[in-house]
Image 1 (cartoon, rainbow, N blue to C red):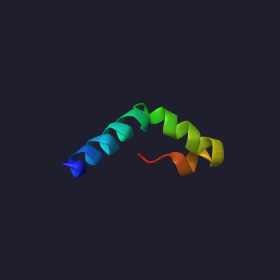
Image 2 (cartoon, rainbow, N blue to C red):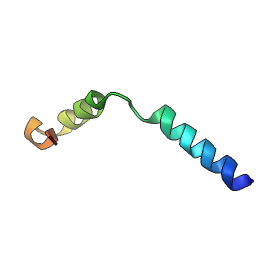
Image 3 (tube, rainbow, N blue to C red):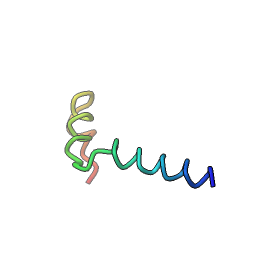
Image 4 (cartoon, rainbow, N blue to C red):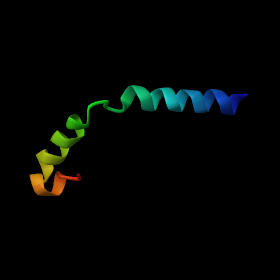
Length: 41
């Protein structure tokens, strides 16, 4: 029972903290690296 609650809490935290827009992660990458490095597609 405790394991299920902990799993649900971790999943909810990941959903709340993870950015939905990939552009957010791209801007973080481009802040520290060149645009060639950040291009993944």
